Structures are given as C-alpha cells and as structure tokens.
Image 1 (cartoon, helix red, strand yellow):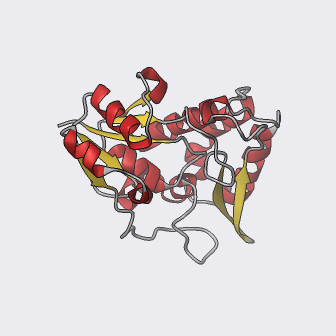
Image 2: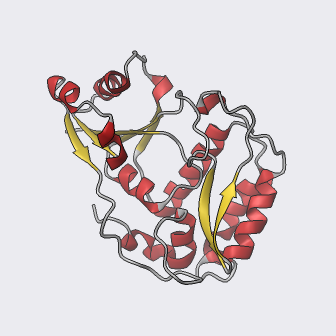
Image 3: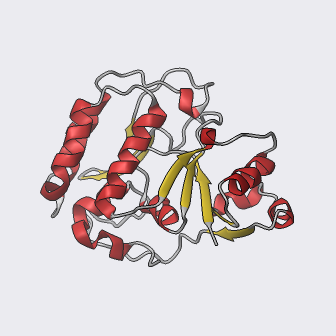
Length: 226
C-alpha cells in the first residue's frame, strides 16, 4: 500500500499539516493552482502577549498560480524573525531551535512564495524528524478536472490510498477514486492534547513553530500518534 496526500503549500503551517504529511508515503505540493487571497498560503497565526496575531508575507499580483506568486517585500524575512523572537524568545525551547530558523529568515533572498514555504516546511520536517517524500504536482503530467486531476496524480505516484483533509468533502468525487481502485481516507484533526503554551488561553490553530518552541523534543508527543 502506498498512501498519498496532495495539498497546497502554506506558510509555517499548523501542526495538523505536518501530521497529515507524517501519515503518508508521498506528499505532493499542489502549487500549480490559483493563489487564494485571505488564506494560509502567505500567512499564519502566532501567539503574542496581546493575543493571537497574523504573521503575513506581502505578495504581489493575486491572480497568479501559487507557484507564480512573488513576494513584494524584500525585508520580510528579517521583519518576521524579529516578530518571532519577540513572541517566542521566552519559550522554553526557543534557544534550541533559534539558529536554524534565524539563518533562514535572516539570509533568504528567495522571492517565490511557494519556494519559501517549501524551504520552511523542509526545515520544520528536519526538526520534527519527518522523512516523508515531498514532490511537486508539476513533477507529473496534469490533466483537467478537479477530482480527475487528483485521482491521476495519485495514480502516477503509484498510490492506492489518498489521504485528504476534511474540507475537501464538499467537492471531492470519491466515486472517481473508487473506480480507479484508490481508497479515500479522511484526516481527523480532532482530539489534539493541549501543551505548554505562552500567553493563555490555549489555542490549537497556530503555526507549528509555537509547538516546537514550547515543547522542543516532546513536540511529536503532542501531535497525532502514527
């Protein structure tokens, strides 16, 4: 059995994104689709002494595909790192992981949002010990049709099970997967335990960096057990 997931890249995603990735054999980044505004592609939430705050990368034209979307602020990396240091500098494990993230944020010159997201996902996977194969949808031949394309991507990847986020239930045509001999499974994001977190009240829906800086090597224990 080979399990595949297909998902757009997000900026420093929440823990559920990485749990889904841990549960599959291949994770296909689906960034040749339309960029969506007010979404997770270029922003995520952090905790601050004043409450939840958005950390957002400014981008240019919004009508491009995700992998064509360009960052419009040359100094975004330094600015974001300053904000993260201020928000998490007192977290128990911030110093353990400071260097690897600081190096990226302070030195990156990449202006393609999708590649920035990918590099941060790669760094976070290294910290968490996630070894799932990551590929791009553009590594494969792409056909038309929303569900048809997903079925064909799983087939080309040699998969016989597709793990999807629950939001896709409103549009995914499961019968197409069944006809292709591909099982559809749905990710369950319920039942996460709380963990040590600065600035109550507790909030699950924040960047995974919150979990890493607060729990350190114990971060995986606070994620889904696979």
